[in-house]
Image (cartoon, rainbow, N blue to C red; front, side):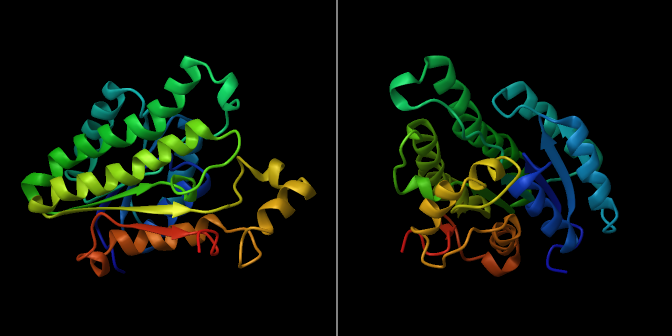
Length: 248
């Protein structure tokens, strides 16, 4: 087990890509705290992780609120005593097109996707620094590199996460902390399954993926586990795109 007895926090870990990452970390021996705005889903996910033989902790958290992030850190430290791995997966995607986007909607998306990532990094790094070690993995997107109609707010937030990852990697390297990112391509989850069920929409996406298939959350999780492990100790500031060749 590559992560035996390490302590991981996964934001947005109650379903989709976040849950797959939490499960993969647990299978490698990590104890996992799931920070989620959906307490019932987080509790159910933690029960599934405990069945794998690790400890799991659900923590009700809205990452767009600094007070929630600080409370999350407190609860995790009270339960486990340390944080070895942080996975910033919580994110929002759907919204109106750019010309209809309100200030409130812009703030909502950026509040979770970018502000939340930064302050989770900051507050968790504060407790990693004294131990001179830690792994931070941010979940960005292939849309950090390319635009998509109707996704201006999302693209901006994920491009911000990519460069934030690079900047924080430089800041935290002297403290023994690696900061990297995973950039999913088109991945089928509960949130987009209805959209991908539309034949024309699915085919539009497949036509742009050299591997001619949609990804799975588990395939993203594999990259996250690698970045969390000792195998990635000499990597920092990097983004691994898991996109079926979409950006090739």
